[in-house]
Image (cartoon, rainbow, N blue to C red; front, side, top):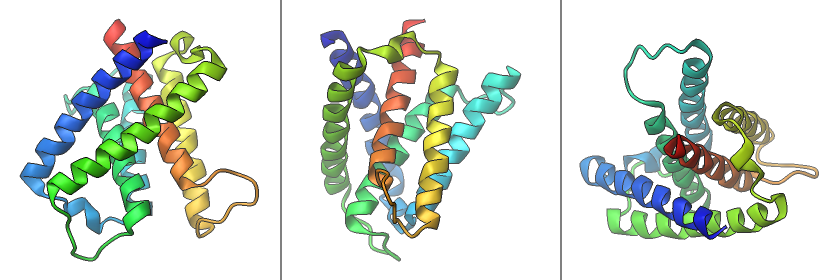
Length: 179
């Protein structure tokens, strides 16, 4: 499992670098997005991945790896927004956003380690397409929770779904790097 921890951290380092560079280019304009809009952004990325996986055709030319990276980063943005709430115009300094990014990815890493122990690294025997499907399922669950104003009777909340989607996307990136 130490290999998984090392690979996980490498993926997150790459995703964080992209998050930080885009923050320098665009600021934190994403702060205006409501949680439902972030969920829809994740949906768009996952749907594109799934379409490419099913058809084998990529007309835009951007690679699937970049879409999984975007899912990781949108999940982190969602987790930050859950803490801060959407803002009509209030951006945060990029250094603060990156610090929050580190906090949320640390939380996701710790959750991954616990689940990875209990599930015996089952994800290593999965297909990337199955991880895509799990992300799609989590998106649909998240949309239902959002449509219920965040209320659940027995299920985990939006934050748990974002953490799981983030981790599934990291697993997909690890598997893709091994092939």
